[in-house]
Image (tube, one colour):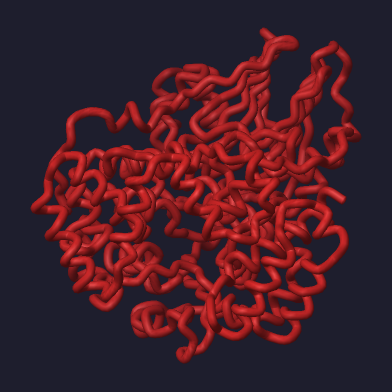
Length: 607
């Protein structure tokens, strides 16, 4: 896990070492153990290293052979198997790193090596013979890669701030990104970022730079990979795939821990480590708030006492959030639609004291229909297939099990035409400035993410348009504290298997994640296996924003001349809603955070 940066000149001038170093030092926390640069033929590659495999100086990057120079951010988990295959083909190795395996794999197979990689990665390769540069991103976007293309150069990096340091442009906000954030609570669904001139290389894609020509190619297409006929789910096959994913992500020369929220996904990882891998001594890290608090999950986390020896806790509060506010916003560099990621930020800060690698549960919700609005998408799919009996049965079971009509409301919402879905969301967000909203009604979220016709299509679209913002927050939170976060549920073999199984493997008898729950019988504590609610790393933000210090921050931030002039938020409408929140007539904590985060982001990065 590291940080990479690069400058590719289109005009035959030499890439500037000083600018490259400036970018690297702006994200030094991503790689505190080592750094290096490579410059040749108008190409500059920079790397800051967090040592995970082969901690010796032999793992220094950029890494070169006779033909190529390479910088890698991430891990190739199956490097052991690939190394053996390459040795048979005549390659020799001088380190125990996955980086050298990747370098030799690229030498042997070129971009075709990508299909053989099991990992999370963003890397750049310079071809000394052709002078081309290839920049690659992993299948699902676990590792980030941003770029700016100007008239004379391409600049890329693992984060946005290093590019802002050197690209020489005025930082300008992307209004479409702001609209989607305010109206749909979504970010990162396209190549666009909150900065108008900076793009994100899409997951499963690579970029080739030949001379002054830059082209993007898709090397991995999840929809095509799972388009074959549906397969019958099998819990033994599922647990075997999950075990393999976890085992591969235990490969490390530094200590490994688990971020344990008390939810189904992270608890599954912890339980497998204990029951299948004998890792009772593995460290876990959790956020708690006191058992009287609705956001607290102590009662589930404590089920592991007596099974895990090293359990650590952090207690995020309104005061710690206010103290961390600037660093938190600076670390993420783009607005976030809730304070949920702040809980993980504090967990990673705690983990830094004990481990260098964590295992995390991201991805399970997207492949197993874990969010409760998936019920609505499932009902829509059943209706389209005329499976009315199953539809009515699942509706009744949901109401009985969850004592809620939420699934039926989402079902009706997903039946609306795209424009009506956007209009419905705008009506809920009465604080969005009307003139601003008129200019940005079209959204890929309403069209593609919420327009899915089948369950499989909905899951694939969540990988395409939804998952990546969670992965970005995970990357920023972990790397802010020089932690490598690994996500077993995003092993592509497990993802492809799960998405090809029948719908009832995801939702059945009113429960989400049915195949996971079935497979974890006897492994996972029953109160967790049969949990009906969905929290993840949450915070009691609704109560935080009623505290005096936060009231002062919210009112001063919103009711400022500069916030009013931006034209995104109807400040008077927002303040009226905030008064209702203070009186506990409504709970709009997410909206309140969005207003404050957006304005503070503007002041830090745009103004």
